[in-house]
Image 1 (cartoon, rainbow, N blue to C red):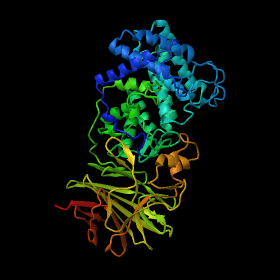
Image 2: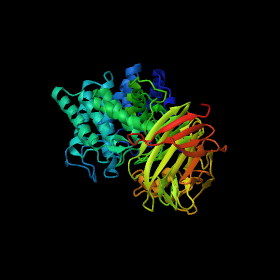
Image 3: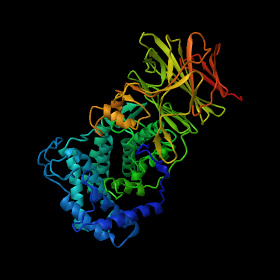
Image 4: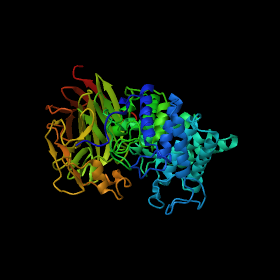
Length: 610
């Protein structure tokens, strides 16, 4: 079973001018065949997200006209624009809409669902989207649109902005991508307004970004991020926010958008595995956007010097939004317009500098969470998630049912490269059920093909083991598919266990249910509205790799050693000496030294042939 939306890396999509012209040619033919006598370009099956869709395709036709001067397009642009202005601009309050600050304002807005009162929750983002479609038409439709129609469209766009920023609460869904999109709409609109009015709209847009978005950023993994649906990050909407930040910087030149985009881009880079797999979010765990992310990943990948285009998108939306039959939907047309207009090339090589929350070399990657516990491990094309035991999630030593991975104090990190090896040492103080403060040292070493992990902790009572992850998915080349197995070996005993209990709170990786489905089953609110990360935290137990201690470790230590990416057995020796704790395999020797003058742990690494 494949994960439905984690498909090919986005930088694999052709992005030459010729490729984009082919996309626009396809849209043109679909649109001309679909255009109704009333001028609608909506997909026949469109029900929700409908208020801006015809206008979106109109914007693509306007861009196509600008690039090709196809004589069939001016009439289609005029007719479809007239349809939107006549049939899809609402000025009466939508019954049941709870987010208004001003009743009966008479300002225009776009509806998420056309029927009055049917489902008004999406009216705010639908109006943001309609504003963006409108300003794109104002930017590109000089030929097809006459002065009167242009003036009417500009007046509606001005009204959309005022409805979004005056008649309603700003960003009522606490969705960073929607909020930044609104700011982008204001910045683009300002360029079409006269003198003082344009300056006021621009100033208001920048003020909203500073006071309503930037001031409420959430910290995760050392980065300050625009909040998304009440959480720090969502792997579907986060890259869309990055695209909005790219467009905000492109149209305004304001450095704040570049700074915040750089921060979000570095965060995404640290989250992503080599294969572009990502998991977790405040609204979706596994749903990935596609072309909506290209602008931001390409623009900021070039800025920070990293291959963000490895992000796996949904290739069914490779160029534009589509309905199940593959027919074009104009809902995200503004992003395709900007993607075509921007000529930034893809940066295709990894960033060279070590990142605190990532270890990456060759085909191996470990993405660490905010507590420096692995969030995803990738080796030999298999992706491992944190396993769960007794409602505790992570990678780390387990004793008497208690997982020792949650830090009680500062977490220290040391990165080293030597002899073709890349290593990271993570040290953290942890407290067990006995209230004893213990020092857990986790060493990660890779040659770019396999990953060794060694975990040392003060001697534990009972029969401890290392919780070494949940094998969850694998890269089969074009897609990511579910798995319950992985190529793993251990210097101690190794077993793969599955939950004995059944039900929503127990996740068996052999079952067809995906992590996202399981997370939503445990979330407080329905799928698409509940927080899957919050739901997943209620998981009691899961499939898990469990490794026993290495024999012949120092008497006062338990040491665990696991190798990901191969099932070949390996041996580890552990010795304590004057320089520290020496861990030796047939591939490397690592010395976990005493703390330096600043109490930072020392790490010395040497390849075996050295």
